[in-house]
Length: 304
Image 1: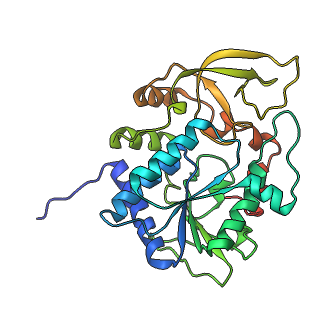
Image 2 (image 1 turned 120 degrees about the vertical axis):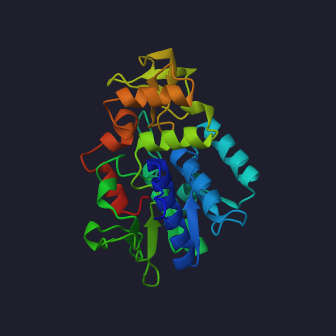
């Protein structure tokens, strides 16, 4: 009798993600990996290495730069692309605002996140990408859970949850009409804790912003801490404090709150997560709280 081989749960998640990445390479002509510099997209680059090395990635890395990113993330992005030796395409929201005559967001915490959609759709059209790979997970936000791993978008980049295709037995249907594209989520079945366990196992280096550090923060009415930034429009009455914090996710600096933490290692963060009662985005993303359907509305309009 042959000896049965039982995979560790991380091995199973990794094998599924590698299979999905190879399906993208096999089914699409011009795929791209959307890279934010966050832990999920960093984990995706490690999975891509395992899927395609010693060859080159069959897709470029694409970063939509809002201009409000954390400096640590931009530095890490450039270092990682250089180390991997892979093509990095950067398109800036600021350029889109100027070229399209868009209105800059106002208010005290002016997030450019909604405007990323225009830049993303422009870069898809510029390079004729037919598939865009991203690190979204179903546990992040309820709208994420409505999408399949291969999520079809129409020729306007819009998402219709009623057009989702069945995905049975790891069979993914990438057939699209001219002008359409597919958003692909290889780690859709992972959780935040899974990602951190994988980072620990693979000994993946991350931007220091994920670990405990001293930072000037603005205290919001909700009690959340927003990292001080030149992009904020603060009043004299706003309270600015020095706190020891880390970031669970890295979006726009104007809408991504920090959490107080002494976690200085991956092991510490895993212990934090085992005790956490609030989701990653629920604890840190201010733009998700603008309405009950904030994320879903943006996804319908073309947001990743």
